[in-house]
Length: 300
Image (tube, rainbow, N blue to C red; front, side):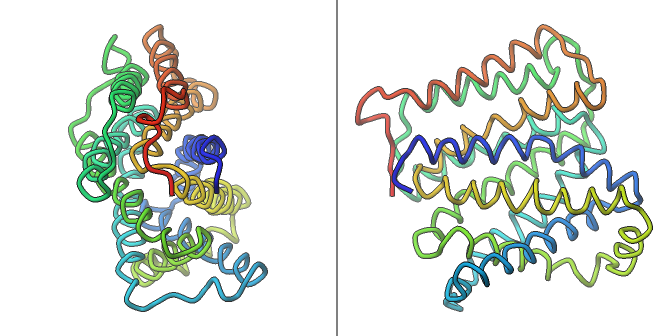
């Protein structure tokens, strides 16, 4: 993808869809699925959808070098399996907005690792945008203004999900130099689904899906709308942006998560929440302003 603006749009749309993941994860939790089973459902459906798309688009895209399998173990097992389990556990312990803000410790890891591994320049523009976005997340989560309750277990799970999440952007950038976004997305979720299959009680999952239309809807929504589409878009966008900028743009997710919590679950919107949303939007605008060659980062 040649246009950095279009790449940024792909990242923003992907993050917006991820922002409503809590709605579907809670739906499946209410149906009786554990966080591990919810993760398996998400991964299995996504792998299946990506396989069908690959077969239709170009069967050659499914071919990979066995020596590159480590990439998909990294993105599939660590950045999907471990991340999802921690994320869903966090969502059960704290609000949707708090879950999202804890996840977004990830861009800090991404920016530092990108500078070390990819020689990505950490510009003042990126740092200011990161600070604005992260402070905006703190406000939307209610950590300032008394809008939220602190839960230590939820906090630790949330930071852990952020650390695992950052690996997807870092390893994904390496994989995308050689493979198509569809290929990367398929193998990422194939590895993840295979890792969890035997321990996720698939017969129980199938029974719940067949006995509850709401649960089936939640499974399909989680696998297609909240995973297949946004992960492909994120990989597509990551091709045209440096990892640091992509990870900060994805801060749009906690803003959407906050709005979802307000609309669907009646979570209160405070002045601090509104200010946080404004700061996140400002960080996205800042990252898409052209201040010259030095602020553009590395585009492959």
